[in-house]
Image (cartoon, rainbow, N blue to C red; front, side, top):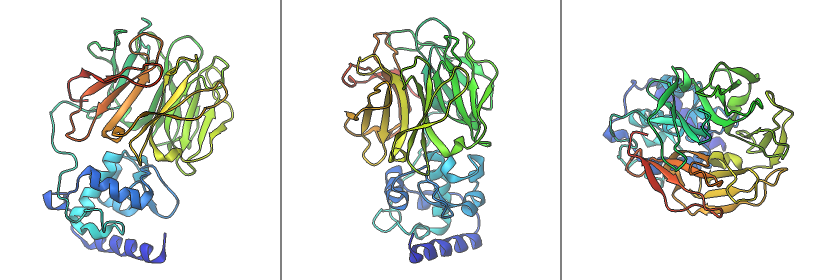
Length: 379
């Protein structure tokens, strides 16, 4: 960051400290696409970035402003919050200070775009942290998600044909304090488990599956996991045991943490950089029919969806399976929802229009087929 840029940001912080606390209104609003342009300049579109310069996340919000405008209701620092949560706090800053609070605002339309980034939609609760596995022991892949408004964890049983049954509560609350949920058999008992990062402590927890949900938890990582994002689980080293894969915010490297049947081994680098430019990473299982677990990731800068084939000792060259628009998907989970042995994706559409619908993208062995609506709204 240049001295001039640092000065402008510092002046903006000073000015904000003198301004009355306000709420974002129409005159101080901007669309998600405009905020994406600001983030592209401020942080190269990396919503999880923390370079140690005193500014955090995609919109480079200072710790003071984050606290001053209520950001700690979401996370301790901006880079630990979701993109939407960062934008909601940025809306308050914009309403008080104006577009000049961001040195990158010129040319983005921030001063003239007055659209509400998240217009009010249906009253149905939104879901987050989608992940998938077999939690009721029927051999069919289920969907699991956290309810934003209550922090409850819900199981949506799969039918094996790509649709879902009525949901069942498997976690009574507090799950909105967790992030980066992923699923696999981490303890080697033959049933799927959940791994999740605790936002407040950075610890990684294992929630063992019990055949009808999850029960208890075991600490897998003692801290620092809030410096990782986009956790995925699969057998990536070919030893028949589920491993954890995660990208490091500060370096963009992708690391493999070998599963040891209830614990994790020493991490191994399997991606040299650039993975913090991905806003979602999941393992849908085997998508290319070679018998090995693969990774799927969304590229923030392009909205493209990429398949990274598993090789049994890491990842092969990526293949484009979605040519754009996947930045309009707020969350997705991967698993074989249709029972044909090929990984599929279940995804929530968030923009434009904030439909909140859930779609199934069926795997073909070479990519994805046309989507089918499996959830009418409120996701």
